[in-house]
Length: 181
Image (cartoon, rainbow, N blue to C red):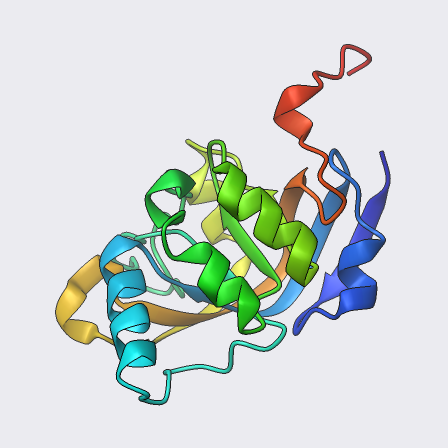
């Protein structure tokens, strides 16, 4: 297990060095999107419309954050279950998305897409949304405001703590428990 400090946008070189079980401290811009936002992104692609953010090298965080308390950039921001985005993720990876962040296992189709398009799936710690929100320094709704907590937000993160669950080589951390921890 290695630890990497990476900055977005991510590149193929960033991705291929990562192995399931590695720790990543991510800094830069990431985008939020849950089920309803993913559906709208795919509908926009089907209509040939421009998307609200550049997909190439991007990282999508599956989160619906709580409202920000006074003086904070964002409220509690814990990951949601990733499987709900599995129907959409392979297409987004084919268009340049390099990573997603969530919790839970991914489908075989998503794992295949990670290998084919050099992507990675990061796990964030479920139940630690208040702690994770402390690593988010800025938050701005950039699309689909009508979706409320599911709107797409542009987040600025600093040393956001992540675990590589599925790497670009077909390995999965959930499949091999590490009893040396």
